[in-house]
Length: 466
Image 1 (cartoon, rainbow, N blue to C red):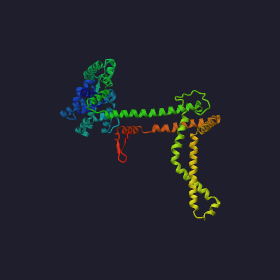
Image 2 (cartoon, rainbow, N blue to C red):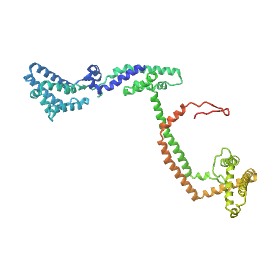
Image 3 (cartoon, rainbow, N blue to C red):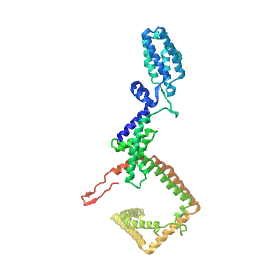
Image 4 (tube, rainbow, N blue to C red):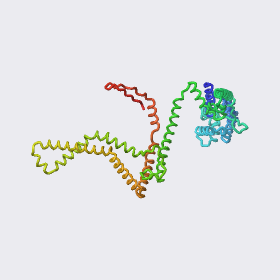
């Protein structure tokens, strides 16, 4: 069926190209025009055919009686008359070949060196011109340059519908019946395999075969033919299919990204303009409806976690650096005391000063750290610290919520979001989505790294690809 569909498509393409290429077929493969012209309602044009027949009669008469005979003169006068009629009636116009007539007139004017086309033909078909230029040479010019343009002219019959006759349907009808029967049989089979599927939907499972049934736009049959050849593994459409998919995904991803980002920014701007920024600030009493999913103040919880991490994890690790800084400051302070310069003459003073600075810095750092830890672990100290943080937050929130300060902050935030929209969202549209899709494809095709054994510690480290 794929081969039959290809043959049908070939006939369709030949039919579509026949009229534009008929001149080529007429000059080089006249047998094709003899067979196919009747299907297109094409026949020889009587005027141009009579013109060429008269030229043939002239050639025959010259061969019998010579160029200067009265019979030849009579034929030349007839050809002059027919030339004028051809120029006036333009038998090429009906089939959109007026350009061919212009070529004929231009070549004849150039040959005779006369500006008027009628005068050029009249001069050419005269005994004086043909005798002067040479009968053999001039008639060869006509056969090679003029006859080949006149011979391709034709007359095409018009049907009762006002359109040119086109009986290609006689060739196409057996193919249409064949593919129609196949489509119905396949639809019945699919319907039996899936009873819940309607017959209409069963037909549309192979929607592309419907192009075979259209009596117009037959060139669209290239779609079902390509799909059939792909199913028959006679043609691979995978590169085209992947390119189409990537193009759709790239365009969709670009537009979706812009829409999502702009929508989020617009939502934030709208919330700020509606005054919801004031609700995000800490208040003594929550007077607005706020949805709490866990009865926990997340900000305070996060602050507590950060405080514990700094106290028990970070500060012990940076304690040597803190001691070094304090020691340096203590040494610098001692050296600035005036009496210190007078005591430098005493032996061992420098070592004693260094030891004293080290002990003092260590003691200060240890005492401060212990004091901070004790304050954090002491319920009373923790409560006082919490009250301090709460008072600070309330005072900051109160000051920020003052009309002038809050309005200025709100305007600045809205302007900042607008700048983000104009600057960074435009960059999203300039991103090479094809490059991003290619990188995604490479990530998907990369094999996962197998577990490696660490010889030093005999530990298995598993690395998984992104």
